[in-house]
Every structure is written in structure tokens, then in C-alpha cells.
Image 1 (tube, one colour):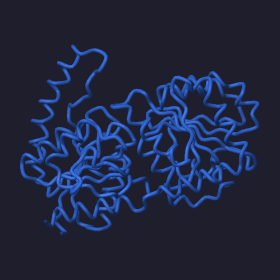
Image 2 (cartoon, helix red, strand yellow; image 1 turned 135 degrees about the vertical axis):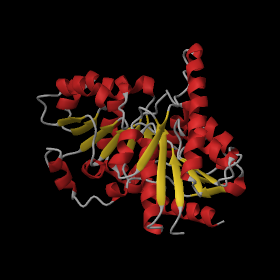
Image 3 (cartoon, helix red, strand yellow; image 1 turned 60 degrees about the vertical axis):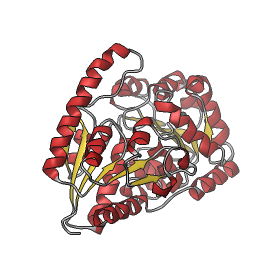
Image 4 (cartoon, one colour; image 1 turned 30 degrees about the vertical axis):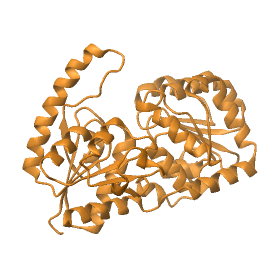
Length: 365
């Protein structure tokens, strides 16, 4: 299979992009001569992150539906039609053996076109509650790689393969000790560290919670690493400019070091973030985003809460209640250790390699 050609489509957030890059890297290890083309959405972060990782990408003019203003979806539908036309040109030109969809705006038109042209497709469903697009695409998909039990509720059981969600390999291989990781962020070696991360784009509620609880954070005896996203960075950074215990960053490039430094992680409940927490055995306080399809982040979070691996705080209660939950958790070392072990027990290792192997099997078939 030295001439293997694969399209990987999707993106929009780091939760889709980083797993996609992990799959691509795994394919290169299995088939060194593989040709990989990414298809993303114009103006989204994959158009920057994918080329930085050394891969070619084509952008489609696709955009998401506006649930608050239905009349604006006329433009959305027009762009969807344009995207399908462009996706067909891309697929015809690249001639992939397999098309992989990882979720995100571009995944829909690309995989729909590929399957209509007889190209085998593989879906990577990251969440515990499948989105509408993947449910539709699954009817013609050859394989569906999942990370949670019970996904036969949404998909043909014969197509499902439990692989887990791919994560950034560099994050798992971070060579630092905990003290070195803390020094990397300018923190002291002793005491507890809380990592607050709102995803690659930031999370408004988490940033508002930081601002509303600034005095408590400064007097808590804890240290904090906070990823705000570019949109919120200046305001949050200004509030903590003179702090020695709160480090504010717009984007954390070395997440491996950030996780290594932390005793507790405060995070949204995206599938990628949860997979990272599981593989590293990190106790977590999860604040599911209410602005996602089918409220799937709450379902992701509750799957962990039910296993005793995480605590969940509603988005609407975060400003008042988030740091109370954090304080209760960091004060109980036995509970922290138990939650960490339960997180580890849920992890699926080598997910990217497993998915890459399924891609190769489809191409051979």
C-alpha cells in the first residue's frame, strides 16, 4: 500500500483537528509513502494548524447553521451547495482510496461526496452522543470508530469499532517531571496546581469565572495555569498581571507540560479533552458547554461522573460554584488519587494507530 491516498476531513476546533493530525501521523508510520490531503472549512483554525503540522489542506466555504436566526441560514445553505461542488472537484482530483471524517463543518459535504463516488468512508465519532451529521453519514460509511459504549443506539452495530479518541502523541511523551513542568510555567514547586482550560478557542463562562473569583484565587494558596483563548486573553491577563500564582496564556502549545504540572484540571467536556484526561489519569472538574449540538458535552461529562472519575458543574452555576468544587476536591488527597485511578481505567490507548489500521484495511478491501 505504498501508494495509499487518504482524505481526512473536518475541523473547526482543536477537539477535531488534533485527533485528525494524530490519525495522519499514525498513517505515516504504518505506510511511509501515504499521500494525505486534509479538507477543512475556510477561515477556521485547521487552515493554520494543519499546514503547521506539515500537511496540505484545502478549504471549503461551508459554515454552521445558525440556531438563533433561521433566516441567516439561506447563506448557510448556499455555502453548503458550493462546498459540495468544490468537494467533488477535490475528490475527483486527489482520487483517495479512503475518506476519513473526524467531525466539523467540512466533514459532511466531503464524506457525502466521497461515498456517492464509491470511495469507502470511515467516521470517527468522538462523543457519547452522536451528532446529526455523523448519523446521516453513517448510513453509507464502511467503518465507525467510537470512544464510548452503547453507540449502537445511533449506528449499525456491525460497523462499530471501539478505538477511543486519538490524542496528541507529544502530550503523552512529555519528558518533564512535575517540578520541571511547573518551572516551565513560572510556578513554584510546592502546593497544588489547577489547570483551567477552555478548549483551543477559549470558553466565555470559564473566563468570566476567573474574573469573578480573582480575589479567592489569589488568596487560596493554590497556583493556576489558565488558557483563555485569543478573544478573552487581554482582559483576563490584565486582571492577573501582577499575580505570582496565576499564569494566563491565550493558547498552551505544550499541553503535556501543563497536564504534568497540574493536580486538578478544570475543562469543558469535549471528547478530545476527556480522552487526554483519561490517558493521563487527571482528576477533573468539568463544565460542559451548553452551546453544542444535542448537549453532547453534558452527556460526555456524566459518563465520567457515573464512573467516579470527575465532578460536573453546570455552565450556569460556574461563576458561583466552580471554585467551591475545586476547593473541595484539592483538599482531599485520597479522593484525588482515587479519581485519577478511575480516569486511567477508562483510557483507550493507541487510538490513532487502531484507526489508521482500519483505514489501511478499507483501502486493501
